Image 1 (spheres, helix red, strand yellow):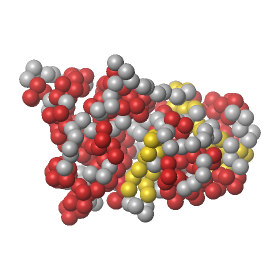
Image 2 (cartoon, rainbow, N blue to C red):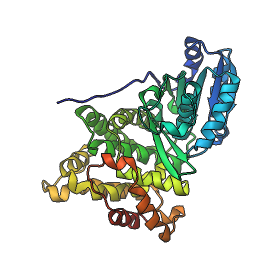
Image 3 (cartoon, rainbow, N blue to C red):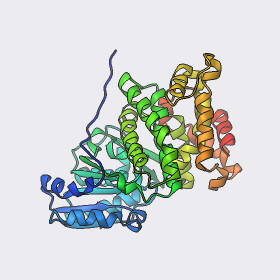
Length: 381
């Protein structure tokens, strides 16, 4: 047995933990802080709360509030130019994966030459980055504790990832109170994103005993609490558990990587700007059914983990998880591809593009063909 497992997260978890932010900023000796967030965080009043905490540290602030879903290279370069001109020395990213991923990418360009696109891949960031404090407001991407940031290259029309241990946030403040304002639809989509991470990392061909433990533990917590959080956004026990499950899962998938579900989701986001969590959730049940023949024992393991009763017939049991995930997506109101604006004539192009996604290299079932991807897309349509 031989493997590597990287974890580099300093986490403060719990309600009202945001009020520890001033002390954290003082520990870093911050003088000028850039706050990175989107319009939704601002509208919910979360940005105001975080800004007030930053001000208590008696530091200057620069605000970048133009975060968009699926951040682009252009947005990274724009924000990095502002940060460099202002002399920013610490970042505070507030929001979901888009805000945190954008802040990671900006941070790369503070100490490394541009353009950002040259760092797409694994371990290509040359120099250490500045302190970044991540304050997640969703339980989905786990971006707050991973070494990954996902960006859109609008010229090549692809979604790509920068994977480097240097870009993991220096500090994480997980305050479940910040998730209370998430609409049910966003809670559902981001929660299914986290479940996708748990499932895909467990069956990844890079999985190890440590990643497997995190993936299964995270899956159980997320599966048990997502319907509760969607049904009642003020259920703080469910909200806390979703944040916890997201973190645990993140430790698994950031080491084991992901697979075909994410390959399809990346392509959908690049071409049609679909929200990442929704794109994952839409195709997840069908990809899991497709992958079942390559790892039936692991499919049965996951089914048993979430409380499904095994028959003892592996040929049947390997499909229990995919069937349950399909039922769960329907219960949570996850939209089909057609309901998200995808046209049937788009599917051929999408299937072709998916084959170029690097994450397919980690998928348990190899040799995926265009026809197989197209069949999955038709089922999700």
